Every structure is written in structure tokens, then in C-alpha cells.
Length: 482
Ligand SMILES: NC(=O)C1=CN([C@@H]2O[C@H](COP(=O)(O)OP(=O)(O)OC[C@H]3O[C@@H](n4cnc5c(N)ncnc54)[C@H](O)[C@@H]3O)[C@@H](O)[C@H]2O)[C@@H](O)CC1
Ligand SMILES: [K+]
Image 1 (cartoon, protein in one colour):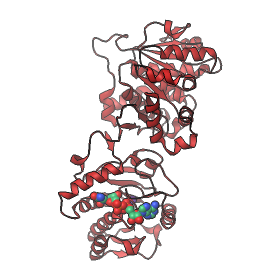
Image 2 (image 1 turned 60 degrees about the vertical axis):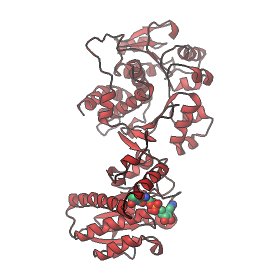
Image 3 (image 1 turned 90 degrees about the vertical axis):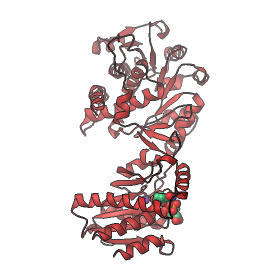
């Protein structure tokens, strides 16, 4: 599990740790880890000795880290120059160490094309708002040069706590972060700027509280959560997932939601709605029912909403399903038809799976507002609806009404932004609910497998929603084999 903490918590933990250490010790630990990462990158491109390194040095401790790491590289024979954004407010100890090791102060960002490495030490967790113009201009120049970049702690210009990016921000090949991940390293658009992540242990662990603010599942976490059938399992014990989806206007949604549900680990899929013929034609193993959901027979979790339209039948189907005392996942059209009061007072779990536009409608906010603050939006939705909320996006977020860590999905790919892919995710996640996973686990494992499945179906090319559904078994195998 990758665990992330807000800046406030990181600062408090650092302060507690620093009290027990000699002055400057933490920065030395950080710089040592950073220098190792820089050395690794330089060796992959050639060697450290004789390499050309430019440090971008801001006026805070992030710049200090860069300077001390630069001094270590200079002692190994690298040609290290430091570009000081505010020469009168530079970390003095760091600069002295660099100069003593043979490093130099650079006059400007010239010769960028010939560099082996740029170390971004402009701002770290102390960065506020969009980068100032001088820093932004420098970042634009560096980005244009295509020189390899390692960001110190965070790519400068991204917001550590939210993952937002206002204006210009460093695009790093790798980010070396200290003590713990920060939310912005895991949430897009900032995460996209961070490149490969490397966590340097500076001894902060024991000072960090439980639980973290944010967490990202990794292979092993997902493997441990997958519902696997035991010897005594039968289809009912493995769970029956009911799918209420599709309409005359959108018949395909029924097929895609069922396709996802069949691969999610439930023992059986029961389809309810007007698309039964199309479902059976494609999936003879599905059970179908024509009447209202409440009369469909045994179901351990419901999925309602994909392609449902907004007719009277759709509205009553949503109400019918929400009245059942089993977990319910509501997606797409279902989100427009649900009664908020009913959702809030349910005792069984409710999972809502909006994209940004649907989330905005549920919150009565503008779509841009949700997009500009995805973490806040998903938390607010979960609290308001007393539900588990999965907010779709390139880094999908899952929040609960209880104050548990928000989960961020690391497997997403832009190819998933394709018609019908959400229907597959709904079916898959509903199936995991029926198989007995708690709602937060079902939603985050569903998103994880869905992202991996898209990669399997895609191999770098565009995917259709059907390809995603067909890629789910390979995603399971991947996870189980580590
Ligand atoms: N606190 C600690 O115990 C440790 C901190 N470390 C490093 O220290 C960093 C935090 O240091 P600081 O608190 O000094 O803060 P930073 O160095 O991250 O940034 C603050 C500096 O950046 C400037 N700045 C702020 N916003 C800006 C903007 N929008 N555009 C341009 N410049 C801006 C400010 O004038 C300030 O001087 C961490 O990210 C990490 O790299 C590490 O050395 C490990 C130990
Ligand atoms: K930085």
C-alpha cells in the first residue's frame, strides 16, 4: 500500500522527529537518498563522473536538499552547477557544501540541451499557489529542452495536498520523495507530473499517525482482497449480483454491465430489464427476469443505472432496488433518479459511481469545481449521501462516509475514457460486492482490475468497452501472480 499524508501531518511528524536528532540530520538523510537516485539515473545514461548536472534551487529547504545532493554528486566527479532562483535567500549550508565539493553557481539556464540531469529543487511541500513567474519561465525552458528531470520531494508547481496544478509545473522523469508519499504524488493531474516515484526513508514512519489521509492499493493488497471460492462454495455462497441496466434506447449498456459482472467473482448474474434478449444472446449463463427487481429472486448485491434512461420504469426500478436490504451500486442514469433521503437512510451499503459531471449534479456544483477539487468533492459526496463514492477519472478516487483513508487507483489509463467502459466497471464492482467485499474494497479493487483490464485489452492501442470486459480475467491472473 502506498500511503500519503497531508502537508500539515508531514510537518508535525518532521518536527517531532527533528527534536530527537542533531540539527540538519534530516536534510542529510534526504539528500543522501536523493543523491543515490540521481546517481542511478546518471549511471543508466552513462556514468556519474563527468556528467553534467543542473540544480534548480529555490529559497527553501527543498533547494537545500538539491544543493547537498549536488555536493555529493560533485564529490563523485559530476560537473554540478546550481541555478539560484533567489540568490539572497539560498540555503547557505547547502550552497557552501556544493562549492566546497567543486560545484559552481550557474549564470542562467544555458546549455540545457547538453545536460544529463536537471534536479528540481524549486519548491517542495512549502510551495504555495501556482509557481511565480520567474520560476514558471524557468520550468517552461527546462521542459522544452527535454533534459531528464528528477524532482525533489514533489514536482515544483503541483499542490501537495490536492493533486491540483495551477499553471506551470515541472514534468519529472522521477520524483524522490521523503518520509512518506504526499496526496499530490498519487492524484492526477499532479501525479502525471511526478514520473516514477521513489520513497526515501528518513525515519519518519514512527511519527506518522494511523490511518493515513490517502492510500493507493498495490498488487499484493489487491491479491489479498480478491474473493476466491473455497471448496465448499456454491454459486449462491459466491454471491448473486443483480443487474438493472439498459433500455430500448441504450440496449448495449445491459450487455456491458453483465459482461463486467460475470467476471467479478459472483457465482451468478441475474439481469432485470428490457434487454434480456440481447443479454441472453451474448451470455447464455446469465439469469434473466422481466418484472420488477423486487420479484427477481435471490440477489446479494444490485447494480442499477447504466443505460437506464429516465422513464417512469427506470425511476421505479431505482427505488425498488434501493429498498432492498443488500448492497446497491448506483451508476449513470441511476444517479439522476435516486432519492437522496432514501440513500442516506439505507442500512446496507450504497456505492455511487459518478464521473465528474454526475458528481457535480449530485453536489449541485459546477463540473469545473469538481474537476478542480476532486479529493474534496469525493469526500463531500460520501459525507452528504452517507455512501461509498467512487469518483471516476484518470486517478479514480474512492471515499467513504466514515473517516477512512480515501483510496486512489493507480492503474487507470486514458484509454478507459471510452463509451461503455463505466458500464463494465459497474458490473464488475457490483459482482465484487455480491461476493462479499466491503464497499470500499469492492470499489477500489473494481477500479484496479478495470484499469489493468484496459491495459490488457489495449496493449497500447485504443480499447472498446468489450475489450475491457474481456481483459478482466487476465487482470485477475496478473494480480494473483504478483
Ligand atoms: N522539514 C523537514 O524536516 C525536511 C524537509 N525537507 C525538505 O524541505 C522541503 C520543505 O521546505 P520548506 O518548508 O523550506 O519549503 P520549500 O522549499 O518547499 O518551499 C518554500 C520556498 O519556496 C518559495 N515558494 C513558495 N511558493 C512558491 C511559488 N508558488 N513559486 C515560487 N516559489 C515559491 C518560498 O518563498 C519559500 O522560500 C520539503 O519539501 C523537503 O524537500 C527535507 O530536507 C527532509 C526534512
Ligand atoms: K521540487
